[in-house]
Length: 367
Image 1 (tube, rainbow, N blue to C red):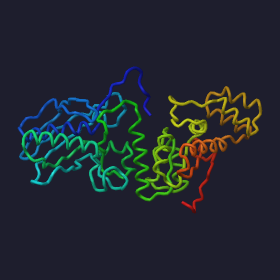
Image 2: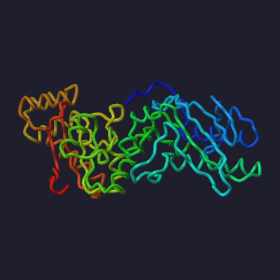
Image 3: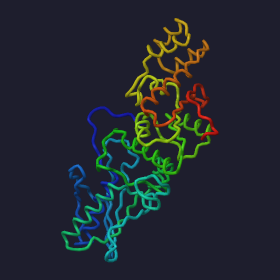
Image 4: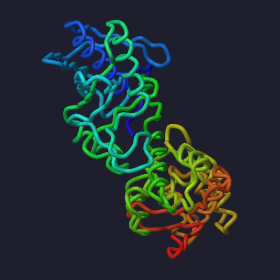
């Protein structure tokens, strides 16, 4: 995860907001021959940003406009991407339809906010674009019969850095944004992807899902159970975001996999496992070690240890199997959060992907 810079952070605009502004500009050009530049729109919460056009072109019954996305100070993979809207006149009675141009994905799995086969343009951006089309149609006294195609050059390549392939969004990026505003380092996009992953797992009939803190533990737990991609949740540091959504949208069996340090934090009650937002309490870790028979000398060394990894090394020297206890405590914390909605397993892996602790083991025959 990119480190948050110091000082006030600049907000940005979502892909959906940029697509909406480009759509307005193209539709306006079709109606009176001129492209508003800058083009201004009103967002769901009342903000009225204005966007400079990068390109614009008009032909017979079609117009196209594009905007460069500015995500502010957020480390958004689509920052500086070009968002292109092509608006075409449609037959009378057609209404407003949406299409995926190059770089915008198509939904291939159920459980997402738009149906299978539809372009990956989420409901709120669609609503925003419909509002712009409708407003201008009423102003100029014409029917709102149009086809809207959104394209993002290079979007298929950028999408490989996102969760879209795992979610079953094929061929490119999603057009997202419920408010139109990107709040830097809000982590809302990550948590949103966790939620969509759970939705897809449920819709595809998965009864066992796994969330991991990192790539090593993710690969290890996926291999252990031979889980398909749609059963893997990109939990990362957001254990709470995953568990709270599962409490309301349960899957029968949930495995949490991770490294020792991250799962010590979960065991100690932290639901956000990022280093800037939670820390390992070494005194509590020493107490845990004491309760399973660690020597006083070892407990004192744990209290002054630099890292949780160092603690693991100290315990290994004295054959104190602390990882199994941490797995049990982490499972208890997760179970308290999920309030009985799902069965929980916790598995701890070392940096080489070897299992060193486990609690609540599932029987593979039941999966």
